[in-house]
Length: 203
DNA sequence: TTATTGATTGACT
DNA sequence: GTCAATCAATAAA
Image 1 (cartoon, rainbow, N blue to C red):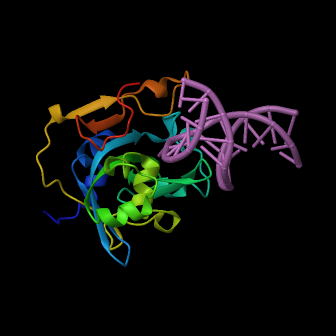
Image 2 (cartoon, chains in turn purple, green, blue; image 1 turned 45 degrees about the vertical axis):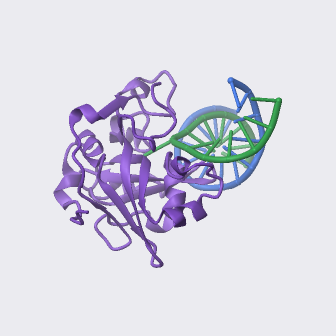
Image 3 (cartoon, protein in one colour; image 1 turned 120 degrees about the vertical axis):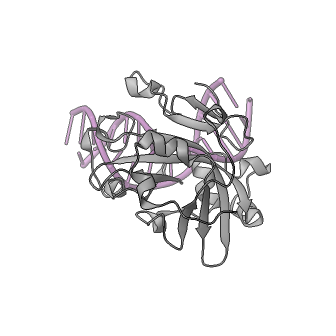
């Protein structure tokens, strides 16, 4: 498997391009005890101040979403519903709050450890097929908010499999059934047919 | 100051 | 299909 970390420039591309390009890449997590790895199979783009669905809509800024304003190549981890963590890949230059939410990954390495962290998962494909689930499986929480994605604890490596445009499916983002236009923007990308994609298909 | 909501998940009817 | 858990940020008052 290729171990080349994604270069800094990768994260400065258009956020939609980053979201599509992340599919097939491998997310690595070194907990200090062990090294876990999982392939990214589903991601959503969030387009900053002009995106009503983004935490940074209208330029909102708070201690929680501060990491969204970091330079591309950092990590934004937030706590939601009082109990779950979600991980984003920050894109664009410092001060621009665009990011890509990782919604599902496919375990590659350390799956036994992931099963221990996800005791409620009935099947292996339930381990990481949701944004909160993958953070639990990979031990991603507040300690990694603002972390570099080219560091030792958390990093992403290039695709080691071939992905063509026809392998990538597109849909509106999950969790926004409201009336705002942004709810219908086609910014969710996933690997068509992959067993580890989250339960939602078309909305 | 209080009320509402959510980039979710899992249990249950 | 419905709904509760649980809390921080935002909106409303």
